[in-house]
Length: 72
Image (cartoon, rainbow, N blue to C red):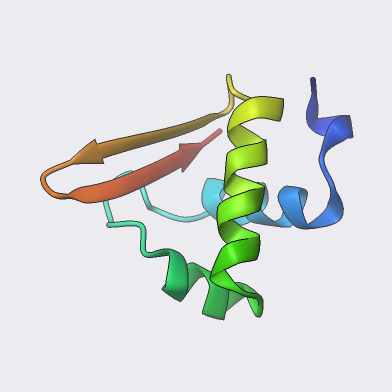
């Protein structure tokens, strides 16, 4: 799959992650949802889809007790 396969919200989340510093800062889904004006369930679902649809562009990892999410 590719970028063209993303929904509007998945693209919005991807761009938000890409432009943010969640590689260094902890990822807090509730806070991300508030910043994007949506629900945490929608963010979880979209993040899951991103890791399937553009898996070479999104990385999720756990370090030092917190989740980190990076996109390029």
